[in-house]
Image 1 (cartoon, one colour):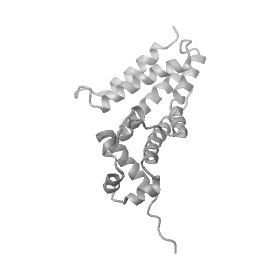
Image 2: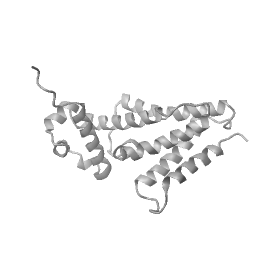
Image 3: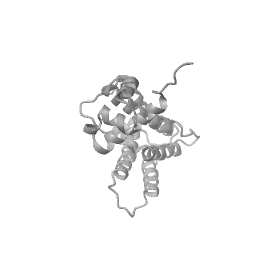
Image 4: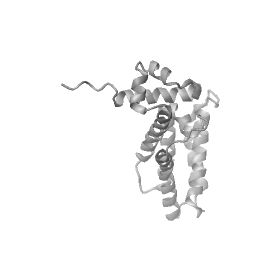
Amino acid sequence: MPRPKTHDDALRGRLLERAGELLSTEGPSALSLRRLAADVNTSTTAVYSLFGGKPALLNAVYEEAFRRFGERLAAVPKTDDPVEDIVQIGLAYRQSALADPQFYLVMFSKIVPNFEPSEETRKAAAETFLPVVRDVGRAVEAGLFTEAPHEQIALALWGVVHGLVSLELNGNLPPSLEVAPVYERALRAHTDGWRRR
């Protein structure tokens, strides 16, 4: 009878979650393989077996963060209304950040100085932007948005959602402010600003 596999996907997932938490709350100096293993109640051997070392672990954290983020954005249904689809992608952006705050800072900051993810991981990260560019293109081609380079409009929209989500996750908003309605209204106001008059 074969021995049970102890270094499985479930352990890998727990290690990535905890690594993201350590990076986003305490910074890169808190992420040692020994501490990570202890926090997840496993051995450093397991960490090495699954990732091969710290650089590969960091790349895996980055990759996992963008995988989850990309899946949530890609899951937004495409309808006949590209402007509404853009709003829904913006809402999915926030939902993803709130669901995985431990990965948000990893994705959108240089939290680990001099760390460069693999080329494959950078490509996967860049692909998360494509649904916005696609739907902006649909809106421009349908005559709903003004004629402008699709990537420029998408970048402006991305900046709005990124800024608001960053303020929320970092606790930089008034505690009495109900964020969700303001966030959606800002998204809708911004998309309206790109409409063809």
